[in-house]
Length: 388
Image 1 (spheres, rainbow, N blue to C red):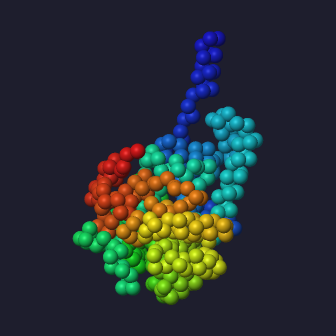
Image 2 (image 1 turned 135 degrees about the vertical axis):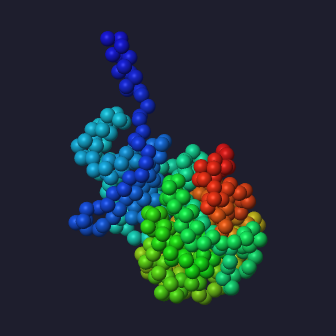
Image 3 (image 1 turned 60 degrees about the horizontal axis):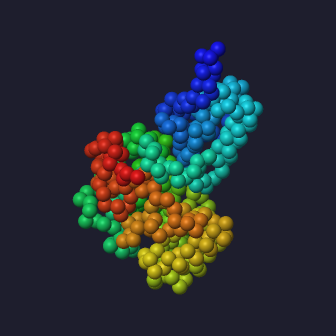
């Protein structure tokens, strides 16, 4: 009897066995009102990423990951609820209710246009920046350090890069990133639209199942044929780094807003535009821009930057602080403000930055080379990430 009692306590307090780590996929039935597909990547620690329609990355905690696992594997609801009841010591009725609520929330995202490329279900966002994950959630890929002729040439560190990777080499890098478990890629620069193969690279990311974004000055987006070639390739989100004095950039904002794609507009506060910076933000908000990113070129402008952030949040709009912007002398993440607090940094943990020649840095502007993603094994690069 003593042995059985000890076994009972052992079973009761035994650590929950993790589901098998790996990749799982699901295609909705042919008769679904809106077709959709899911990619689930289960990590050894029980957390997971769920990619909805190669469009939005959902970061799941352990319980949500189990719900996604059973959904994708077609476990009957009655069986699933009993399994969850046994594993987590919660009532099977409550487990069933939570499971259905989880599915409803995901399906709501399937039906919702203009989604944020990153969403978090039951996950503390800062957990993803701890460095404990098996891979970052995003790769920021600088395709080129060339800039549009309208841009200042000193905005890109050209002297660091001796060549640009070929299209096929970028395919190899994306293959390696996907196999490592990186679900999200952002094509940046320099000006990535100067690469004629950008639609092909977006299409390849879509083929793999990655979420793909582009960060651009927006000038080429005013060419309708070119812009729609990116959309048709499977582009999921855009950031326009706005030059308020460039009429063509404003035209690009007007062209993007009606489309079914998430748009973020990045505005840089400088000594030259400080006097009318708030007017620029108001004009964008009145046009219908719902997501903003802010930076400044000077620490002396931090109070005005905070006032701009306060204005955006007061209008119920979103501030995005952890997407990159093209290279600038002052790395913008260091001064961006979200929810009136300095956000945790995910550089080298939640995201990595890759230069046009394949060298991997913890983040844009952090000149510590972790390896080359074209020539070095992923395991070697990840082992070289910043500690702590």
